[in-house]
Image 1 (cartoon, protein in one colour):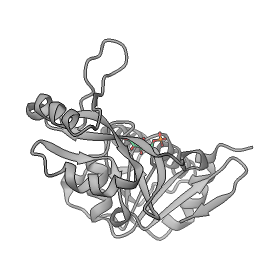
Image 2 (cartoon, protein in one colour; image 1 turned 180 degrees about the vertical axis):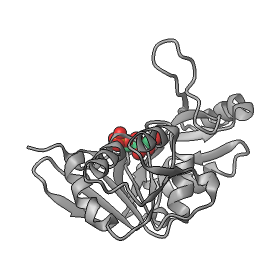
Image 3 (spheres, rainbow, N blue to C red; image 1 turned 135 degrees about the horizontal axis):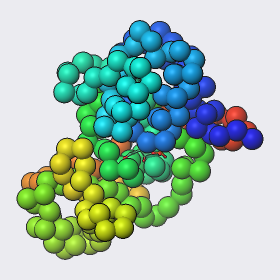
Length: 224
Ligand code: 5RP
C-alpha cells in the first residue's frame, strides 16, 4: 500500500520532464508533488508559477524559483489537486477551493497551455447535491449572503478553526459555501458570476482542464 498522492506524483513526473515553466495549484497533493520533485532534483532549472502563498513557501523553501500569477508568465503545464470529481450531465466537473484557494487556481488553469488535475480515487463521488465554495469581495458579503439564501443555495460563511473569524483568501476576499444540485453545476458557474461581488466559484467545468488523473493506494491510475 502506498500513499495515493505519492503514486500520483510519480505518474506526473515524466509528464513534466520536458517542461520548464510549470504552474502549480494548492493543497496536500501538490505539496507531495513538490516534495517528490525536490527529492529527485527536478526543481532545478525550472520556474514554478504558484497559485497560493502556501505553495510559494513550500516550493521556495525547497530551492525552487517561484513566480506568482502577477508575473504574467504563462505556464507550459499546470498541475493541481481537487476536492471532488463528479459527473454532471455526462461531463466531468471538478470542485475546488476546500483550502480557500480557487481564484488564482482558476486563473492559472484558464491561461496555462496544458492543465492536469490529480486526485485520489475517493474524490470521485456520486452525489445529487454538493457543496461549492464561492469567493466574494468583503463589501458585498452580507448582501450576497441574503441573495444566495433567496436563491435556495443555503450559503454558509467559511469560518477559520477555533476563534479565528472568517477565512480570508490570498486575494483578501471571503468564502461562502453553497449547496448546488450536481446536474446544474456548470449553469451555476455562469450564473453566480453575474452577481456583482462574486469573484469566482470552485466549479471547474470542461474548459478548465485537459485531463484528470485519479490514483489509488495500489498504484492504479485512471486518466479521464
Ligand atoms: C485548495 C484546493 C485544493 O486543490 C483541494 O482542496 C485539494 O487539496 P488536497 O490536495 O489537500 O486534497 O482547491 O483550495
